[in-house]
Length: 124
Image (cartoon, rainbow, N blue to C red; front, side):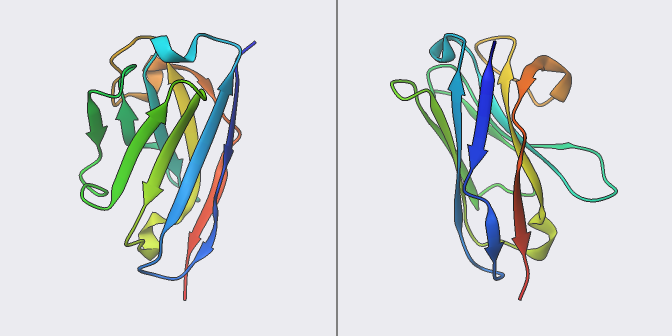
């Protein structure tokens, strides 16, 4: 049984930063790509960032490039999303997801397991 647990969300002012963390258990974490998606009220879940099994390849949505950074620590079975220069439009529930393969993709259909999500609210 795979379990993904996100943490680190909260309320932050525009321009602020957060560090989102996702802890994985139940599968050989280091063999699979990981990703972050987000879902705002009334909108579909959208891709944010992904990282390959070894951290060598990373992918970002255009809307977050230059502001968000994804990383992983395979020894700790953890993936991190550092979010900087936050904007009100970044407000959403952020989910981490475990891929079906090692390289990762931008499609939520390619991810087997999902966490419960962590709320990020950007507001003054």
